[in-house]
Length: 271
Image (cartoon, rainbow, N blue to C red; front, top):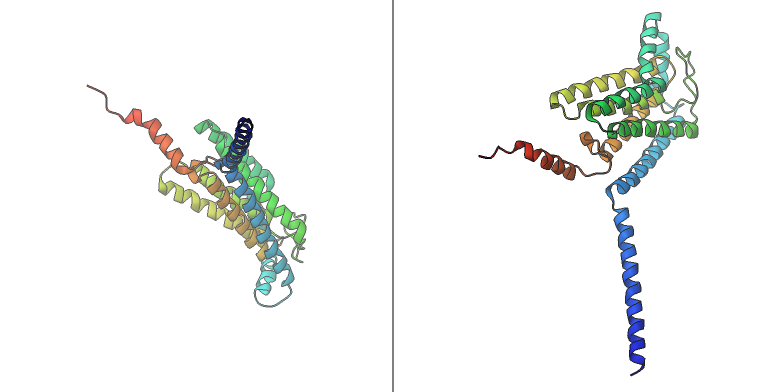
C-alpha cells in the first residue's frame, strides 16, 4: 500500500510529459500549417522548380545549338534581324528593348507601388511587385551563370553584357508587365482587365522580338525568358491570392471579411 501513492505520482508525471509533448507537436504543426508560412515555403519550392526547369532547357538548347532542325531557326533569327536592320528600325527596337531593362523595371515597381499605396492604402501591392521582379531576376541570372551560353555570333545592334541564356529583358518584361496588369486591374471591370492583359502581352512580345532582331539573343533565349517570367508571375499571383493581393491568406476568408464589413452599409434603415 505505501507504494501506491508513489506509483500514482509516477504515472501522473508520465501523463504530464505526454501532454506536454502533444502540445508542442500541436504548436509545431499549427505553425507549419499557417497560411503565410505554408505559402512562403511553397513559393520557395516553386522558385527552385522554375530555376531547375530553365536550367535544363538552357543546357539542352546549348547542347543542340549546332544541329539541324529547330536549332537552325534558333541560329538564323538573330542573323536575319541584323541583315535587314535599318537605322530607323534599330532606333525603334532600341527604345522598345529598354522596357525590359533593370532601371525601367525598378522604376515601375517604385512608381506603381507608390500609386497602389496612395490608391488603396496598403503595401501588399508593393510586396507583390517586388516579389515578382526580384524572383525572376534571381532565376534568370542564376541560370545565366550556370549555362554560360554565348550570345549569337552576329553584330550586336544594342549594348549587351554577360551570358545569353535566358533573355533577362524578356523574363523581366513578362513577369513585370503581367504583374502590373493584375495590380492595376484589381477591383475593375472584366473588360478593363482584358485590355490591361492585352497591353501587357503586346509589350512582352515587343521586348522579346527586339532582343532577337537586335542580334543580342538567340530565339530560344527569349522563349525561355518569357516562359520563365510568366511562370514566376503565375506562382506569385497564386501566392498573393490573385487580384486580392493578400499574401498567404485564402481568398474565401478575405471575401467573407469584406462582405461582413460591408454588410452594415447595405442594411436598410430601421423604422
